[in-house]
Length: 388
Image (tube, rainbow, N blue to C red):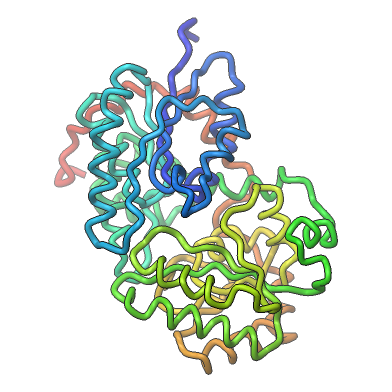
């Protein structure tokens, strides 16, 4: 191995994408043969979404640059403007750091920024969670696939994701099935007792509870508030106390947040912005079920396993385990769905649920590949899809 440390650059724009690779970042940072640097941008640096850069600081990871790129607005131009700001500001940082590889996870605008930086600056890149797909029409999915075409390597969660990448012309030798690194935290995070979690959340008088994470859906932003209110009303009708997370920064999020402010003080709900990894994992572990439309229900909940009621079109047709029940929007549909997932038949089904996204050992697989692959071999992409 070369005496020169392998420089790894990560790009993160929000708490959710940071948490996907935080374990890998930590492992890289602790290795004497590697040097980590992070570019932090987007929602991480806004008070509105909880200044979640604090979690990166608490993990004591090296931050190369803080790029204030997010515009807190419902404008459709905000995300493209955020991406443009990030790209413009990150280029000189990347050039100065001279990384051997750039890594990024998922489908938000930060991933295509990372892919463009690597492609134009001739730096190998690794796209985590590539090849995934839903049919909800969100712009995130063509962004994910466009990023894949720009990326050097793919670390994917499932064989079907590998197959999808190959269908869009990615050679098999560029694709590695490692499972989902975000699942590792359910193996490594120590358990906490429910009463301690409730004390931390300042709801120690609660007994059982649900967890709600709901975002706006692409093309349905104008009804984001109504859809959110319907979920709250269904939970209220069933007398289910619920911890409710702040949504992401997509258009429609401000309408959801306005509803949260409106009903703040309702004893049925406890609203939160962001939580430490330890608290969030254990909050999920002790919940009766998860409701909303978060990918956490698809990816992470099977590791517990936790029943999930996915409401609306978001996440539709994404590979899901038997712990997930999909229902349409509407108070009646949601109420019926809650009764179903709390019923004995569904609860019995949970006992045999297994995650299709790995066994919680993906971080080490990714780490070993980054450390041992000849990354420079994959920098250029001369392959013609018509020849394979």
